[in-house]
Image 1 (cartoon, rainbow, N blue to C red):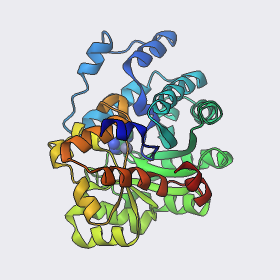
Image 2: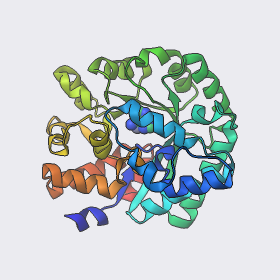
Image 3: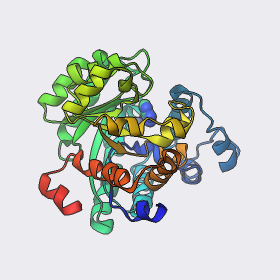
Image 4: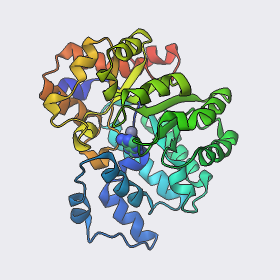
Length: 324
Ligand code: ADE
Ligand code: ZN
C-alpha cells in the first residue's frame, strides 16, 4: 500500500507555501537576515508545534513567516517545497500564499509574489511540475484590507489564478467578504475559501452562496448538515481535505475517526492535501499513507482520492488527460 501511494501520480490543491517552512530553513534565513527567532534551536521550535486548535497554530505560523524579507527568501522556501513534492510524484500543485502576512510587515506584495512565482516557473521547467498560484485573504483582517490586496493583484493576473480565504475561521464568516469576492470573480479569478474546518455548516453555505466558491477548503463540518452534504455532492463541489492537519489541529481526535469514508460514500469529491506540511508532520505521501492506515482505505479509494485531485484542479481537460 505504501509503494502504491508513493508511485501514484498526485495533484495537491490545498497547500500554504508559508506552511512549508521547515525549521532548518527558517533558522538559515533568519540568520542571513539578522533576525533573532524566539527559540534556541530547531528542536525547541519543533517542540512548540503542539496545537489544540487552529489559533494555536496560526500564532506560530505568522511568527515563522516574519523572517521572510527578500525575494530570494520566498524563492528558497518555494523551491524547497517543489523539490520535496517532486520526490513524492506530485505532478501538479495549486498553492496558496498570504500576501497580507507580508505586506503588513512592510514587505512589498511583488517581493513575495515574484520570489514564489520564479520558483514555480523553475519547478515547471526543471522538475516538470505544473502549478497555479492562489492568494488568500486573511479573514481576521477586514474587507477593506482584502480589497486593497485584490487591487495589488490586478496587474499580476498572469501570475495569480485565484483568490481564497484563510486564517482564524470562528467569528469571521464568509459573509464578511462578500463584496471582495464578487469583485475578484468579476476580475476573472478562480474562487476558493476555507470553510467548515472549525466553523459551522452555515459558513460552508455562505462560502457557496455568497462567495461562489469553486472548491471548499476542508469542509469537514459540512457533514453535520445532511441537506448541505447532498447539495455539495449534487454540485460535484470538491473538498480539499487535509488529514494530518485535521489531526494536529484537533478537528478530529484520532485519525481513525477521520470522516473521509463518510465523505466518499456520500458522493463527495474529496481530495487529499497537506495544508501546512512543515507544521503538521507530512507532505502528500505521508498524508495519504497515515490516512489509508488509520481508516483502512482500499486501493480503489486511494486511487479515487488521487484522481479527484486532478479532476478538481483549475486546469483544462487536455491538461488533466496529459497528467493522468
Ligand atoms: N492558514 C494556514 N493554514 C491554515 C488552515 N489550516 N486554516 C486556516 N488558515 C490557515
Ligand atoms: Zn489551509
